[in-house]
Length: 235
Image (tube, rainbow, N blue to C red; front, side):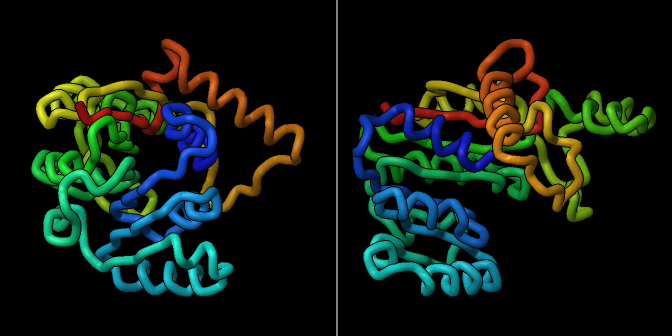
């Protein structure tokens, strides 16, 4: 999934362009480090002290040239205006965060203000229009019926969290001057794989990634993906 997101983001920019990236809710810093290794300058914003400590430890093991390209800050997505000037970044990532924010519109507006003109706001959200699919495929018929009209779900950590709908987020992005440029489905075929499932062998892994990538770009498959990747561009 991570490689899929990176490729979808990079497709907007010339090969080799070095980007200023803000990763909001960066977690353990996996994507931030990967982007720094690719030559980009990355600022990670994380409110969980334990996650931030894990990120700092991972960063400490990197070569000096990569460490110099990464800045880690304790804070959350509602505090971007405290830490940064408007227009400071070419790309703002907000992946797997909106499901934990009850009223995300104010945060999204703040993230859009951080973008330079032509900058990309990358959102990874749970697809509310496909919430019935996971319980249905697992044979949980009661859960599937309950999920058809739901905007919340219980995640794999056992937490009750939000999901988002494509139409609603499209309207939100237009309203914050970062209208939708492209969107993709993520985890079309692999959502039911248990946590910790090892990846298949090299040949099968490449075929799996190719199938996921194609489904994520193709109707009607992308509309039933577990997650949606939305890319808004600052006007």
